[in-house]
Amino acid sequence: MKRLLIVSPHFPPVNAPDHQRVRMALPYFRDHGWAAEVVAVEPGQVLAPHDPFLVATLPADVPVHRVRSLSTGWGRLPGLGSLGYRCLPAITRRLHGLLRSDPRPTLVYFSTTQFAVHGAIPGLAKLPGVKVALDYQDPWVSTYYQEHPAITPPGGRLKYAINRFFARRQQTRALRHVAGCTSVSARYFEQIRPAHPWLRDEQLLVLPFGGAAHDFEILRQHPVPQHHFPRRTDPGAPLNWVYAGRGGPDMARALNGFFGGLKLALPLQPELANLRIHFLGTDYAAGDRARPTVKPLAEAAGLGQLVIEKPHRLGYGETLQCLLDADALIIPGSDDSGYTASKLYPYILARRPLLAIFHRESSVVDVLRSTRAGTCITFDAATSGTALARAVHEQWFQAQAYRQPPATDWAAFEPYTARAMTARLCGFFDRLMPA
Image 1 (cartoon, rainbow, N blue to C red):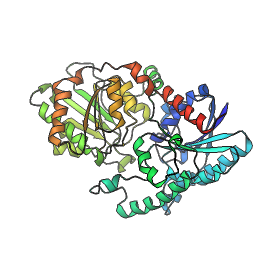
Image 2: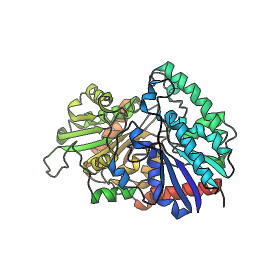
Image 3: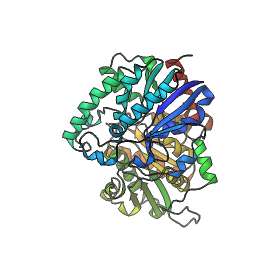
Image 4: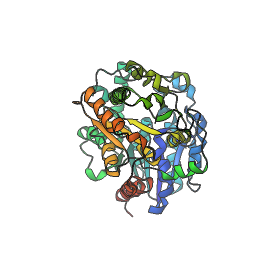
């Protein structure tokens, strides 16, 4: 059995999106000859909500090594605001201790968007018998705001430029020492390879997150309470359509297309006046700092009365329960063609009528079309708002696709499951560290 140490500072019960690849893969590593262990931060030292449901999905036989980071109070000092910087010393010490205590050849896999923690990579890669791999769930150095200059980056342009300068230097230093990289999107590799020409094709694997059917099996046996809307049992009750996930200005084109299609449909389909569209968990900020990003677009379109936005983050189990309780589901995509929306698979597994509006180059388009799991409407930079609204109206509203669950091809969906994705990941690990 080969040894795999996974670095995931966020880990259940912490409710954070960047541990999902690890969490969903853990039940299957042993089937492919890898003994996995996880190195994570103590949950109480992570500024994120907790979700007990996530713990229920973990296998009991995988060791989890917890470290204590610098306290959140250190975040007031420049450079220590992120968890990655605060936990880097402790994670580095723990990794070196684990590697010294067991001399077996080991692959260390960093799967996190806390990019500062990758500062441990150069030192680890120099140890005998150790190879390191890095997972790109988001771009470490994004080109999005250079490609969309009208959008102000988070924290303002000056702070963003300073952070980006240091991130580029840190990324180059880490990539000189990795044996391989995985990424949820081919676009991320296209962005990093020009500046890092030593990366070879065989060192790179594009691997989206998988779909965890096991999560829904647990949820159907043990439902999680959700208080955002009632599950409809009376045909005369309001229809509840749901999107649960982040918002942001990069989704404005897709959302405006959806609202435009709805405006065209309302005079022709009076029953839609009984519709309520719930946008849940649209801001990564916690509590009172969360701000709506969808409701203002709906109000500008004259549809504010039909839209309910609750921007604060939801627990993972609560999110899945909302998908199950909805009458139909909506996924607006980014105007960034590299955006993959890993949340797609839970939406498919919820088995509800599904509308996705995505950039035509997004991998989401291929998945939905091959599995026939929902209505997929595409756009690019040349697509006018009028054309997109008309497509939404015709394919979703006029066709009444929202009334019937899609006839999903589950055999075609199998390659996108967590089990199948983990098999591919382990095959990649086998090439990085052959027996």
